[in-house]
Length: 112
Length: 114
Image (cartoon, rainbow over all chains, first blue to last red; front, side, top):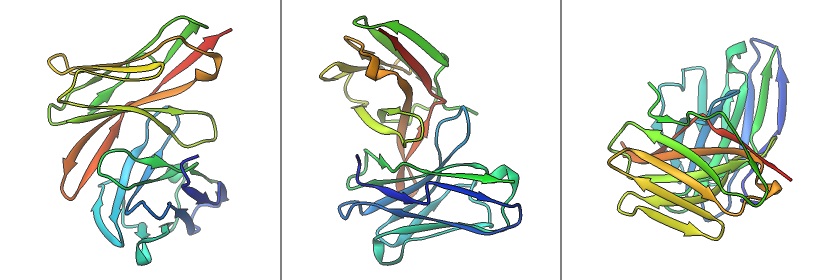
């Protein structure tokens, strides 16, 4: 157990709806990452926070995606106007140092 | 362009024998490598890592070998146990912009047969 929790674990939504996911890292994790994983692939980097500052965004993060980390604690990932191609596992990872990242259980999104 | 490749989607090994999982990378800027294990419906779990200045790192039954000239790393599990059955991802790290980013391979499903 990495201590990183994510909510919800599963989300089914209709195309065009907005969804929001939450990640709670442990207090020692000043670094927080979001990844997306599709079937048969490894996780792909989406965005990175150091404390409350969003320092890196992947080109995968279209303008329909937004992430926040207010006060440098929990983080949220919102997807607006969901598309079927957004169906994936969304993973959050925390880290205290620059190397190892510790993943939460993920949120599985299904867009119908 | 896949910078980290795991060319074997699956591997079956008898309990007690050695499991060898392989990973190749193309970007010579990667300077830190990690292996993760993933069970269904769970997030990846960190297993072991190695810096590019080393060629071997050992932790219990798990050993990671790095061959920089060949841009190849491998994970050895000895002896293999049924509980090791999972998907194994290798990941490579480099400092990009303001952060270290991980690039993952597509994973290898390891099945350890009792």
